[in-house]
Length: 409
Image (cartoon, rainbow, N blue to C red):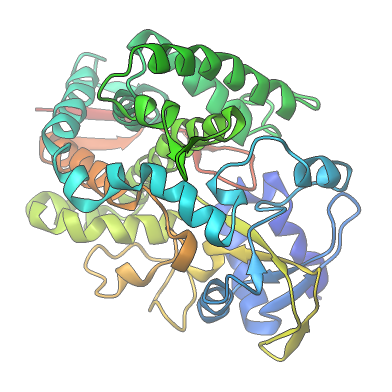
C-alpha cells in the first residue's frame, strides 16, 4: 500500500526531503496527479494549500491583489508567525501593490537589460578567473565550494561596491539566513534575528559611508534613495541591501552548481553543449527549470477564490511550489530529463511570474550562460569524484558539495 497522499505533503515542509531530489520529485508528481491543490497540516507549521501544477501557480501569480506576498512570503513555523508578520525590516518579497512597485523602482534601473549588458565584460572576466582557479587545483575540486558559491557572489557584491575583503562575511551570513536548518551551514537554534542584526550592523556603517561620500555603485543609490522627495527609512534601506546581497547571488550559485551536476548526470547533454556551445544561451533556462533553486513562495488569500475545484478562503495560506510546477508533465515533455534543446524551457517559473517576477533575472541568465561558456569548452574530461551532497533547506536549496575530477585546457 502506498503512502497516504496527505502524508506526502510533508515534502513541502521538510528540509531533509529536499535533500533527496529524486524522491521529492516522485512524491510531487503523485501529488500533481492525485490532488494538485493539497491541504497540508503540520504540527510545526500553519496549515496551507500546496499549489503544485504549472497552471495553478500561474493562476495565483496572475491575481496579486487576491493573493499577497505579505505578511508571510516564505513558509514559517507557528512560533515565528507573529514575529515574521511584525518584522521591522521588510524586503521586496514582503511588499505588495504600490509599496512594492515604489521600492522596486529604487533599484530597478540597475537590473534592466541595457544596464546588465554593460556588465558583460566584467562578468566574463570574473567567470574566466574562477575557471582559471580550477586549473590550479590539481584536477580535483568541490565545484560548489570552490567555484559556484563565489562567482555570482563576486558579481553582485562588486555591483553593490563592497570591498572584496568582506565577501566571505557576506557569504557566511547568506548561508546562515537561508539555511538555518542545515547543521553544517546554519547557526543553530533561533538564530534568524541574530543573522539579521549582523546584516544591520554591517550595512549601518556602509550607509553612513555612502551618504557621506557617494560613489557610482548600487550601495550609494540605496543609501541616498528618496520616495516622494523624502529619504527612505533606514530600515527600508537595510531591506534593500539584504535582499540584493543575499538573493542576488545565492539562487544563481545554486543554479550553476546543480546545472553542472545535471550535465554530469546527462552526459549526452554535456557533450552536445561542448560540441555546439551556441546552445548554451538556450540551455540556461532549461537549467533553471530543471534545478529550480527557489523552491517556493507563500501567498495569503484575501478573498474567496476557486482553484482547481477547491475554494480558497480569506486568510488561507498558499505554498506555490515552483519545483513541482517546473516538472509538470502537462507542460514539459519528459520533465525529469535535462534537455538543453527544449523549445519551451523559457516557460519555467523559476524566476516567478507577474508583479514579483525576479528583479535580477537578466543578470542571473547572464551569469549562468557566461560561466558555462567559459567552463565547458575547456573541459577535456570531467566526472564525479565522490557522492554529491545536498543542502537541507526548504526555501532556496541546491547542492552542498559536488566533488569532481577533471582535465582542464
